[in-house]
Length: 471
Image 1 (cartoon, rainbow, N blue to C red):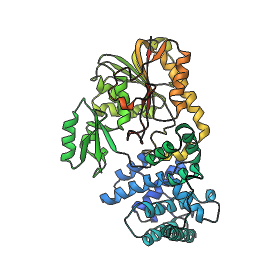
Image 2 (image 1 turned 30 degrees about the vertical axis):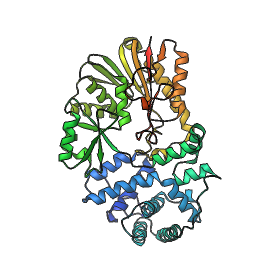
Image 3 (image 1 turned 90 degrees about the vertical axis):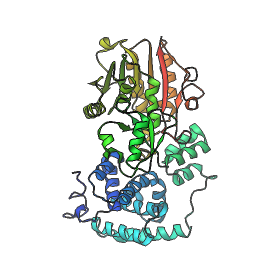
Image 4 (image 1 turned 120 degrees about the horizontal axis):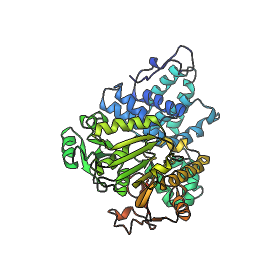
């Protein structure tokens, strides 16, 4: 069982989370605390909590999910409100207290379920158990916030006078990122993008064509009570509306008939377009979401060499391959930026996927914690690593072969600028403009022939891809 409440997390010896009444709000605070203190991602933590059946009712499980993701998405506005009312230094406030305030304030501002006084009372009780003596602060801050918000007494930053501060507060993004996107996209597009990042993304799954076809799986899921529609982009995708339970808990998931994967991510495999019998290299394969898609597109014929630095991810790929009935993937633990055996692999592969490690700024709808965790000083390190990996992988492609470079970010220095730099140093490579390649989705091709999606323009995660060939 996932260890939910453990001794020692409280501010007083002997107190522990086991004393707290388990509720969606107490669990949400626990998850948010772990995200802050351990650097964990929300999705696996939330999955573990839900898998342990701590909450029996579907409404409570839905409330927990909404509180965790909603609080993460709107943390910028929530923190701004708290800072207007807190007399001390906000950065010195205990992290657990901040998350108690955030979750209560989020539910008051953005959800309808229980009256404001009940939200305040539960937050106060939670603070009393976990931070004895601090419950008065929580009570005073929340009651003041409820009063001022209800009376419209808070003066938010003005969009015309201070667009950076306005977008950062009202649409809950760190100011440095707002300034960066303003310089790249302009004011209106920046605001549109930030607004889209705070929307709940659709639940998309990729059908495992080795075991089922899309229409059959759609019928099965509908019979199980899911509301399902077919994607208008990926021919392998189904979209699930308001799932009554977690999809990973269904028998169809356990049997490997599908995997959760955003539509844009699915289209990367379509760009690679592997054929049965070919030799494919997938560097930075991770847990194998895209790797297994390549295998299904090849009808499980040919060879895929999947490379990643982390053994745990490769083990997850092996488990996923087994569940999906895939046998043509060979794994290799290696640093893709310094891969050895260059002589053995040189000019060996028909197609290569470089799904490069990136800032992840195209996935903020699904991973809102990234925007609070990422620091601008870290961005140059991504570009350096991406360049090293691309340069290394390029040597393994044979003449006439195709290489797809992809990221799930929307920053130029990780995408088109990096590709331009690569092409200027590799005369043997040229870009295949997708507009010239009769790509099936012309609306997802930009003026420079690159694949590009974004939550505010296509309703999908923000992905970039370039198709290159070696002459």
